[in-house]
Length: 587
Image 1 (spheres, one colour):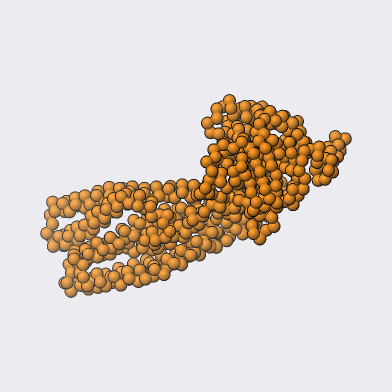
Image 2 (cartoon, rainbow, N blue to C red):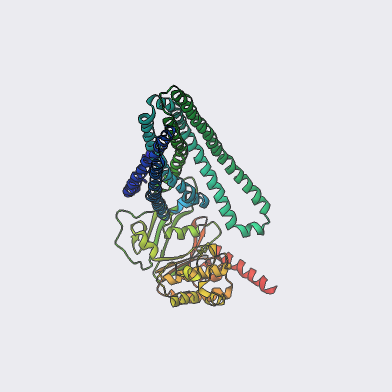
């Protein structure tokens, strides 16, 4: 407990918050331990009374009644200390889980680029469970073992013999020394076990998510073989923890057995020579039995606390993270954007050791204009719109909205004024209505349906048996690629922001559907800024301006007619796509 408390202070305020419940639980536990110790004494008295023929039926019933009363107090007391202590541990676990999730929601994109989903999930499962065990059962075991040991030793010394009690302490001292060295080793091995579990979880999560790709490429055997290797590593590191724990238990029981041997040999000798009554000898051995649990609990505490410390250290890896993208101290008091965007000599690199993803980009977008962005794969199109959403901070240059530097606009305001359809068209495991209204939770059913109509997916949804209440499955797995894209577009249209960003959002729909959606966008987005990334020339031909990127730099910029006259990259893409269309038509 103390070792955990001395770590970074994430637990301290929570332990302080529930200190009252912990105190009540420990007081109840103290009462239970105190009352429980009357039983050996009563049994000893009964033994001596029966041996000396000094007890009649009434006396036996009286002693039996006292034992039953002690049992009743212990029964009710155990319920309440479990309620106070274990209940508080569960509440602290809940609070830690909420803190971790809240922290993850604030972290920047860079963090998730370098941390796998399975690894993050292990923080919320195994690591939190280890911490809960350390602040729940381990607290009980430490307190109970300490208090019970002291009370038992006091009873043993006052009721039986001081010398005999001191002899039995020798094996207990050996347990304490052995446990001290055991704790550090188990902590290190448990940390490695948690890492192996995270790797296995991540592999399973990734394989299940990519199940259709695995089947399409007939790679089931390869995936199975790779999983066996990951699983074997998990088994190997887990067995190292299990073996250590398994070695500790027999040694612990051996030392407990030595305590009994000492009690029987020396106590039996004292009884034979008359220094101790038979009843006290029996009571003393029952007290020894009462010490067995604290000794075993000590071993459990060492394991549980070591695992809890390792888990808490991993949890701090999340809680100690600071987001890269935050509101600055001098944010402007802007609440609404008109859609005017300016980039001046903007340069960006994902890392210092990588080449620049975008270099010296300068352009202007006026409110109500439609800007199309084209270019070869890897030219920086998605990176540019990610920077406009401030998922990353630029390396140099400037980005302004309505004249306000992007880093002086509150993140909440910036992102509330941008509706974004990402390239991967992510859908949550929710109903279609829930996915479409994700950015506007107060939307009515009619507003949701209207957004779906404008995205040309309403008719498809009405064909489903449960219509807008249809569950789409994880990442929208039950929908086609085009249906996922149109659902994402409907979500963005319902948000009705001054700025709309479509990142290759029409790539999975046919040309007729594309034309319908583009016509709806032209009507709905009148007077609002729209930025669309596309690979098909037909998608962008009516845009006010077309930006062509090549290797992170502006290669061309202008209207469709201007770019066609220049006979550059855009012209080549147009000619190539026209030829492909002609060949398909002839077939």
